[in-house]
Length: 117
Image 1 (spheres, rainbow, N blue to C red):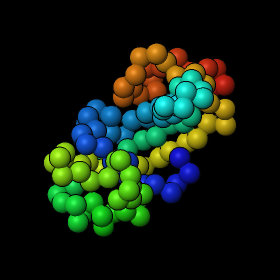
Image 2: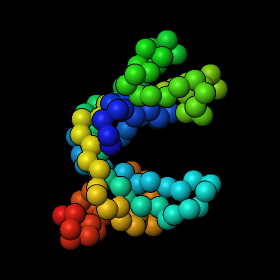
Image 3: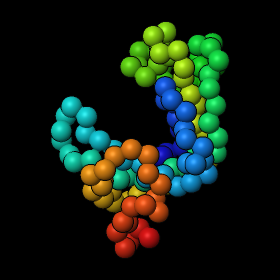
Image 4: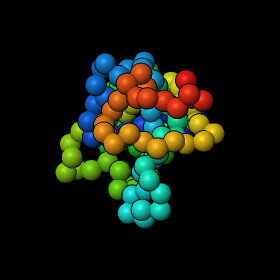
């Protein structure tokens, strides 16, 4: 959300219906449990592509910021790695509680607090 990362990476493709749609960004506490899951912003993806090789993935390091010591780095046990090209991201000044239902959901499906509409 601060513009450092221009590609999000996953081991699965972004469903085509979410390309060029606003998607809420949910921050989760992970193992720390220091806060409840919260919506921290909106992201929009311009396109999705499959990385053909570890070499191609490494050549985009400055775009996805996933370093070799990361658990999200290229894995030989998971043969596919996808890049989701970010076209827009907006960070909310004040996060709000995330909906209980999880997964990719675009903004129009969520009840946004009045100050965010």
